[in-house]
Structures are given as C-alpha cells and as structure tokens.
Length: 173
Image (tube, rainbow, N blue to C red; front, side, top):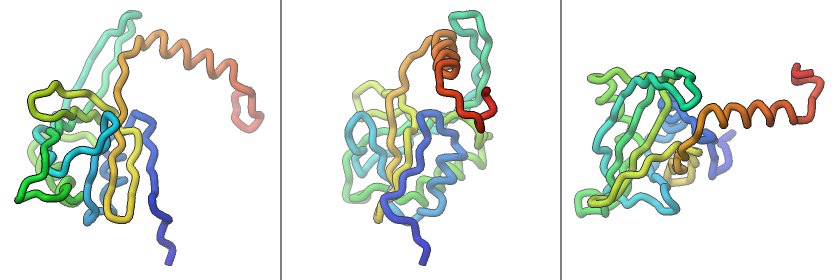
C-alpha cells in the first residue's frame, strides 16, 4: 500500500487559491475539518456564515493599478452543541461550497481569504498558510494577513533576487 505518511502538510505560503484548498481537501471527505487561527483551534460548533466572491480593482500608494478575484469565507467560531458535538466533516464543508458555487460564480483561481471570529468580537482576516492532513482530521492552518506597501514589497523582492546566489541552472545568470 502506498499511502502517504501522516501528518501530511500541503503548503500554501499565505497566497492560496480557492482551487488549491479544494484540491487539498477533496480526497479527505470523511475527516473532520478543523481550522487553526490566532494560535487556537476553532471550536466544534463553528459555522460558515457567508461566502463572498469579489472582484477588486485598486491603485496602490505608488500609483500602480492592480486587479484580482477573491473568495472570502466568513466563519463564526461557536462552541459545540448537542446537535454538533464535533467539527464538521470535510465533505460537508465541500458541499457548502458546492451549493454556493451553484448560485454564485466562484473562481477556482481566486485568492482565498478567511474572516474568522467568535460572536461579539471583531472578525480577523487570515490567509491560508497550509493544510495539514492528520489521521482523523484535515487542519486548515491560517496566518494573519499583514498590511503591506506593495511598491516597497516589490522593491524588497527585486533586491532579494538581485542579491541571491546565482545558480547556473536557474537561467538567471
């Protein structure tokens, strides 16, 4: 049997797409879906309150235009109830997204954002950092989304590339 060793982690480096998340979860429909955010596990009664499909057109502080598609999953962190004593199964989560997709156009390549929070507290915005598959669960690891100055961020990335060691097979030399 060629089953992968568990836990298995699928990295997303904070810029996951909706399609990448769905691809990572689909083979694991019977596992419990757990979300880790802000250093804690979401409670078993959590509820997907809204799925938003957005199209953004922006102008950054350097005068550079940008445009992208985004899918925003809003999740309320609720305690377990008698009816829902455990985290929902991955299959139910996927069914929720399939139902939304039947009525709202969801782009698989869209940037994925999670908005998460308990009742009575402000939501926090997160990126997907990784999906970890464990024996009984699939854990979506969320990380905070920092505010960035895009022109400065691009300049820092360019400088890092310029200062990187040149590997002959990379085609950069």
